[in-house]
Image (cartoon, rainbow, N blue to C red; front, side):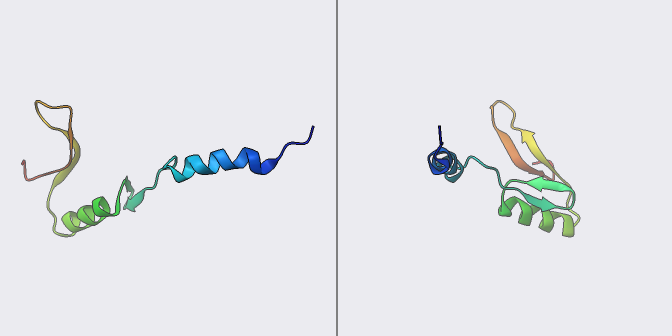
Length: 71
């Protein structure tokens, strides 16, 4: 029985269009999720400002994208 390739591909392509893939941006050896994260990391690095990323926020289930100067 012959299968129609287009009928098989269309649902997969629709899934990709819905964000079924991940995009990442490189900063040195690190991979960051957005261009904004990339820009902030490059800026902080160029100014030699120490920071941490993906830090848990006390008392919540949230995580801070950037933790700068202990605040």
